[in-house]
Length: 479
Ligand SMILES: Cc1cc2nc3c(=O)[nH]c(=O)nc-3n(C[C@H](O)[C@H](O)[C@H](O)COP(=O)(O)OP(=O)(O)OC[C@H]3O[C@@H](n4cnc5c(N)ncnc54)[C@H](O)[C@@H]3O)c2cc1C
Image (tube, rainbow, N blue to C red; front, side, top):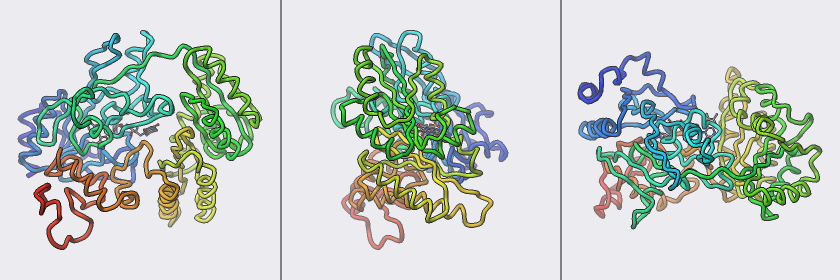
């Protein structure tokens, strides 16, 4: 089927945009989570929404699965290709189609990078608020699919709060538009965060935000992570909602220092980066209160200008990559706990780290309880990878035990599909399949992601005995 499909693809796209050369295919075999790899059957590089629709239409005709890929920075294996399928890469779809400042909107193609949107409107005093640390390279299509977050999402909300409309190619190849203003069910809300399983976004209308009048960025250095954690709770408890509150522990600071020489205060057990923004008078008052709350900090630095602000952010923004300086291999974990559980969960992570003899560096969006433990190991050491995996999984179990979630912003992808039954009941997962089936009854759009395989359209793992109730009731088909 794939060979016949490839011939058909060459009829709808220039031949050089249909990649079958085995060496070139390897470029696309993983995303940012490199230990899940698969060589795609074929890669296509469409330039227009109509081309995406024709490619998807052909996949549907030949019953071949397809996977969308933006910049491939995902950290849950969401863009992991299929050896028997088509990888549809949006890197040629990089046009900003319209900027409408009076209505605070921009219409962009899915391959446009997150930061490019802000760069297009910054001089006019606007910006696109969600700011993943990967914003220089990740695509807005990937952001929509993952409902990505970022340091400033504490105050401004995640991607879902900044998307006004999406033109999508449905899994049967139709081009339709989902608009926030549409009456009826919030289908746009269902699409954002669906990790490429409900179709491919081909045009995205984003909300633009006004740049704040004043910004104050503070770096507070504490002797211990507990002191830093207490400060976070106290800040939120005082009714302050900073634009961002980020925390890094000593190991993460050590890595950032080795990678980008960020010159954070020496000897800190934890640093807190707090950014306040808004009307100047409000920011000034909040800063005075913040200074009182952070009285335990042994050093408090306030950025005097944009260069100093950038210097404070440099260590945090480069933290994931930085751990490569102190460890040959690492797993970037992503989980959420209620803010009040942070101290207990961090103590448990410490305990796990000692028990498994695996170092864990902690970087997190502390304001919304989103942990990013970086589980460090030496992949040359026999058994170390397995121990790191065990620690990483145990951290997710902790998040669930504390009423949190297995992902805050990196998505479920292929990596965490196995944890879904720990968070959701059979009935929950079946109900989610109804949504999936409504968009993609044949299960061709990014199959094997988010839900534990072979759970597609109502199947449960293992051999099903008898007909699934959803099939029996005529609400789903089983293939
Ligand atoms: C150093 C680093 C820092 C990061 N920091 C953050 C952070 O702070 N916050 C955060 O949330 N994430 C972060 N990430 C994760 C990642 O950058 C985001 O998930 C990002 O949104 C992925 O975008 P992408 O274009 O690379 O998507 P890809 O990795 O290419 O794809 C991700 C998912 O989106 C789907 N997809 C891609 N394009 C489309 C489309 N047009 N239509 C439908 N589905 C599509 C894919 O099928 C896949 O399931 C970080 C990653 C790295 C490497």
